[in-house]
Length: 363
Image (cartoon, rainbow, N blue to C red; front, side):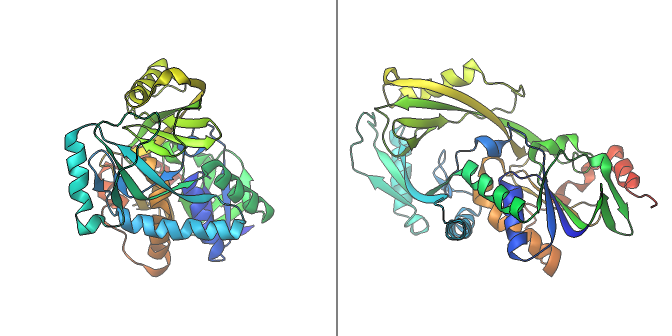
């Protein structure tokens, strides 16, 4: 069978690639191997344009948020399911300095309609320095979103549950052959698995481990709060608490240290004796050396592309960055140099060159 695109990976990014290709009526096949510890499988889906630690707009934050907000609202309409919902996030200040910084930002025209102060007392929460509100905040129900995309693609025969193997991909007359199918282009959305793949393993992808707790409580507030970590209401008296960030722990298991860290942080604003831990999960986010996404075309293998390196911000960034990649492919519009993988071309090594040569074969 002939296709225009092969998409590898059905996490958040791969799903968004598939949705945009489908909307453009492109013929494609998506391959998903099913990694239970991908960051997408455990992501909480909180999305906003603010870097809370420094109380600054994230890089291109407002632009990303506006595009993503419209994108996910359309998915709500198409799916007839409320997969995406607006929230307000309450930031609990840890010091007068943080409080003053927030107040200063609320008086800045740039942050108008994004940040505000909260004068309300939140039951059971200790906030002696006060709190602020992120007005532009939403939540994507990630697992339900992935299930919706998977179901939609299966019905259209666009999804194959299979483990992608780079050694099975071959190239003949500028067309990619994978098993019994032929593709004009390939888009890799394989997250940290790219490190095991000779196509793009030269890119400086750093697996960032995040651990989350599912807890039961009748004292946590029924809204998203952030105090360095977050508490997210799921169902009645059930919450997700997270998340840790570790570039050093690469083990495929949850840790006592992460659990203790999360509960200690939570204990600074609420009495944790009334909180019971139900479950603990982990996942690996694909981050990059310079903290910017990795988007673009392979420097040697033409029509081979990657979308990666968005860390915990794939829900925020992916809709617009995928659109920009497709505009690059079809309209030759240049990619943002901050994300274009050509900034790391010098890192190409002999393994990558040998792999590129091995793609050529005779039928």
